[in-house]
Image 1 (cartoon, rainbow, N blue to C red):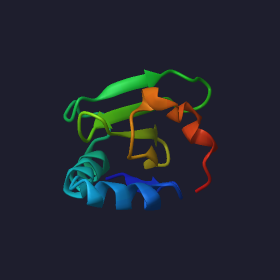
Image 2: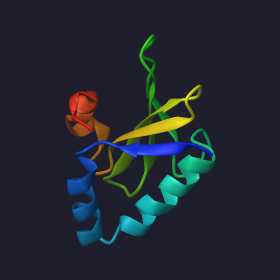
Image 3: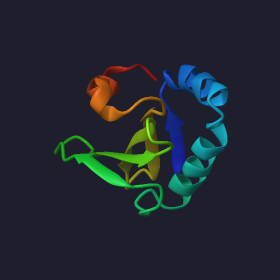
Length: 99
């Protein structure tokens, strides 16, 4: 079982998800990530291979929103960078947001 760490920005994203009635979808994806972050459900996608930094992955919440995250296999942790918007909308600087 993986531990999930959400960046500070996710607090704002949760409010947006709740307003759009997508919070349950996000929770399901978090549960799926905790069990297996590489499962192919919810339109799993590898965003970029950033060696030596961790790769970024995404899973679709809705047509316009994705969960963007990285996985540390050794520490069994997942860092969620974004849960609102689409990575193509300028959210590529997600790794610079504070925890």
